[in-house]
Length: 80
Image (tube, rainbow, N blue to C red; front, side, top):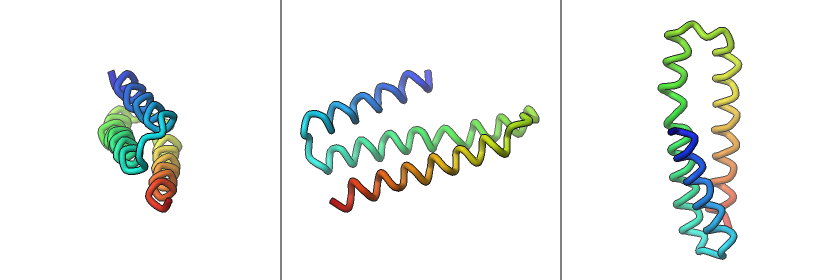
């Protein structure tokens, strides 16, 4: 279900950007997508720790890197 909602939000972002929507609308949808994705990280990381997932540290580092990329997107949208 997570992937489905993520793709719905991503498609909406694409439609706004491709359709020439206002930067504020694109930014709001980007914020919504990022919030959804990043909000998924905390419970996922807790579950990995609880189950002793061997690749936890690497996966957490990937979450951190993706969060930084998302921040960069947000800065680009809000600065123009």
